[in-house]
Amino acid sequence: MFLHLIQRTPLKELLYIADNLAYFPYQVLDEALFVIYHIDLMISTMGSNLLQAFREALLPPPDADVKYNPETGRPEYLDDDADDDSASLLTRCPVDMSPLLDSMQASQGCLLLLVLKEYLKEVYGITDGSVFTINFH
Image (cartoon, rainbow, N blue to C red; front, side, top):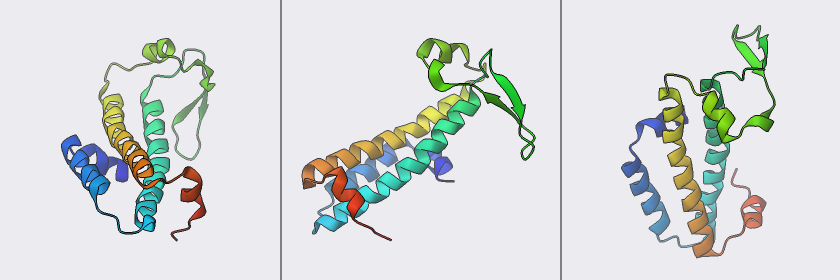
């Protein structure tokens, strides 16, 4: 669901939101930690969904074994991730590149969140360890 929201939001609007989050005058350190914590949550879910969508849009490798998933009825290709170099990925690009382009466009939002996270960590002197020690549940 969030992936579709990011895909539909123009990059200029995402940049505007990230700028506001970056320059917001946080009064206590926990406020910046809260933003970083939620960026980590969003990146972990959205990033894995983007990667899965990108992999599904690629053509299967020529030497992959095909297995049909009984739950979905769709074929699954068993291949190792060792051949994910640029040359092998280029040979697996489909004729219709729109799903790949959608994934790449949505990844811009992830990259923007990562830049925002690093900026907040640098400005407020936050380490990765301090983010993981606080529980915001």
